[in-house]
Structure formats: C-alpha cells, structure tokens
Length: 329
Image 1 (tube, rainbow, N blue to C red):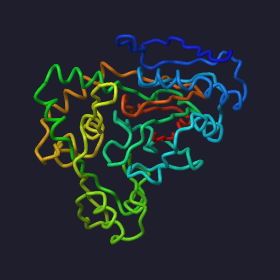
Image 2: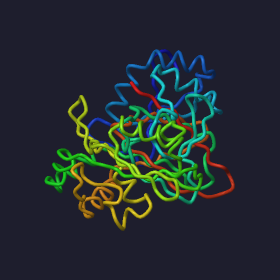
Image 3: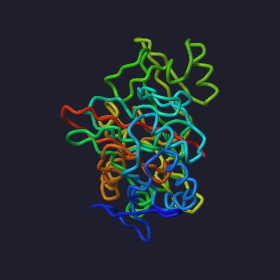
Image 4: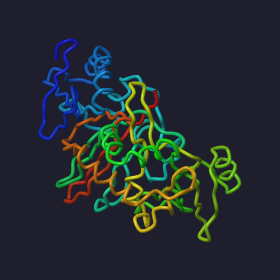
C-alpha cells in the first residue's frame, strides 16, 4: 500500500444506503508487513478512515499482520483513542483481560446467541468505539452481526411514529440482577463486586446512589439494580437519530424478559413498553444487519453510536476467540 492509499474492497451482502456502504472493508495488499508500518499507515489515513467510519458505521480490516492480543493492542492503540477499560465499565458480562486494553468478548457458552445491542448502552457510562479482533474463527457459525441503528430507527419511526416519539421523550430504565459471585455460564454473570468495583454492600450502595440507581438485595446475596433514566434514542452531530439502547438484547436474550418485559425494561417513567413495539424493533433490525464473516486476523472498528452488534452461536472443535478493545473519544 502506497502512502495515503486505502484499499477498499466489496464483499457479499454489504448494505448500501445513499453513498454509504456497511460495513466498509479494507484489504491489506501485502505491503504492510509489520506493526510499525501499520501504525504509520493508520496515522497517514486516520482522518479519511474516521470520516468513512462516521458515514458507514463500521470498518473491517483484513489481511493485516495481527495474530495475538498483544499485536491487536498495538494496532488498536495506533488510532490514538483514549482507552476505556472494562474494569471501569458497569457491564455485567463476564470478561477476561489479556492486556489493560484488550479483553475477551462475552464469555457466554458457544450455543448462546448474544442479541443486538449498543455496547454498555444499558449503563450511564458507555464507549464511543469498539474494536473487535478475530484471533481464531469458529469452525461453523460465530459471526458478529452488526446493525445500522440509524436506519433501523428511521424505519421504526416511519411505521410507528407515536412509539418512536415515546422512545425519544421518555427514555428507558433497565433492571438487572448481579450475582454474588461470577457466573461464567451466563451472558450476564458478572458479580456485583466486580461490576461496581467494590468489596462490600455498603460500598456498592454508595456507588449506586452516586450513579442514580435504585436497588434491592436478594436472598441469595445478589443485587437487583435499576438504572436512572437513560436514552433510548440519541441524536448525533450529523443529525442522524440512532436507536441507542439494549432493548433487542434484553427482549430476546435476558432471562424471563420475553415473557415479562417490564421485569427488566420499561420507559423512563416506569410505564410498560408495548411488546409489539419490542417485536417490531427486533424484526426490523434484520433488514439492516450484516454478519461479519470472521477470518483469523480480522479487525473490525465499530462506531458504537451508529452500529449495534451481537454474536451468533457457533459449533465445532476450534475455539472461537474474538477479543475486544474499547475507546472513548
């Protein structure tokens, strides 16, 4: 790759909306053979890549010389974004750190599907960008679906304008249960001590109060916590409205929520979200979703405001290893 060159290629099933392509795919033609060369190339092309990311919502980098958590750390760090560590997040998924920047994607068992969501949108603190790195792809399945949240909300607004306005005006509240100890067999098994970075119930309550949560302790030593009002829709600088939340993941994947949505998700005023509205958002998302077909060494840079992501279930003997780094800029 010569200086300033970005080698965009097409892959099957990309989505096109106006002038944008989702996701954009950048192929290394073989001229970038070291991490130092990659870092220099990123620096030279950062403005153009960022402009493309804002328009598209996701960029897949293929054929770059990455094969480990450490090389992924260097590649993602070359973009110069401030690190958003998992430890400082309020996500209740169990993760394992490899470096300060790099950790595993959701450690839920391989038969479990992780449904579409914006990273940590169910908490008051969320990253602006998500880097994914495929160290090893699964034998079968295991794609990372990504969904254009602005296109989804535009269609939802066209079909159900009153519901869309309720999402804009009322916002959302989420209620989650955090166990007393990490449960690695659950997609939401991070303990309250780890989630809140505390050691005692008193410290947990002080942290929750500071963040505006309400809570109750359960008989098994767990914690049921409800967020302050969080946005369901965010308006970006470019005027686009994005469906910035975890409603689909909660409705489709959280235990017991499909049967009783209000147990975990309500409008910000505490009123129930119509089940048919949750189902409509879930169904519409399929039209704006692209499954990232992982190959070993791939990196995806996802704008966490523009694009939701998830994880397809997978099978086979080969261990699927997809690592993550978060950024806040």
